[in-house]
Image 1 (cartoon, rainbow, N blue to C red):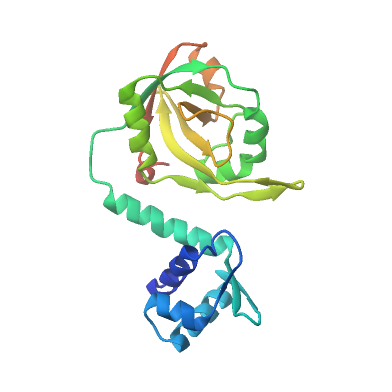
Image 2 (image 1 turned 90 degrees about the horizontal axis):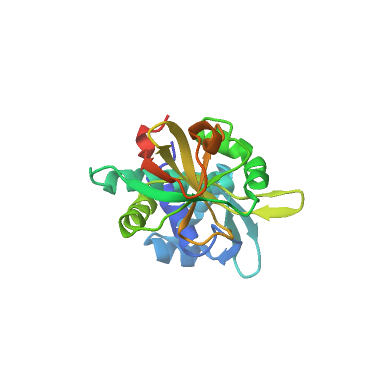
Length: 226
């Protein structure tokens, strides 16, 4: 298990941008930022490098540091744990909306992210998404509450020369029958009032739904997900 002083080091590096790109820092500057000595800062960076949480290259200006995927996952784990702790018990989050036809890209992206989705959600996703348009104020508020709840985060990657960004997932139950997830891509062509839903089955066919039909999505809290 990662120790508090190490995850705080990762947190401090992330605040300087090292979670997204290589960042130049000195041990003196890092120590001042963290309220510790230069020697302690140097030791903690060395531990992060040895444990595979950070990459380091020495330069004339200082250390060129970047948080690795392993380090990023540790920070996400801490973030999720804190969000669960801060989230008070409350009524279930229910979102209603109408089915709309998508732009036809869902199958491609689900295929590319298929392994990551299966690992995170526990099922192999059907190649396609159900697009739901949220068009009432109560459901828009519910979407806001959903986005403030702990998510599952699929980290971005490169595939066949292309860069694919992070994807945020929220487990939901569709019409009280089908378990699925709302997926929100870092890069999307959809407007904010369109939610994309993935599941192990073709939701339209399984529930015999068509365009403009109303669907009900109930958020499944992360700690209750299978």
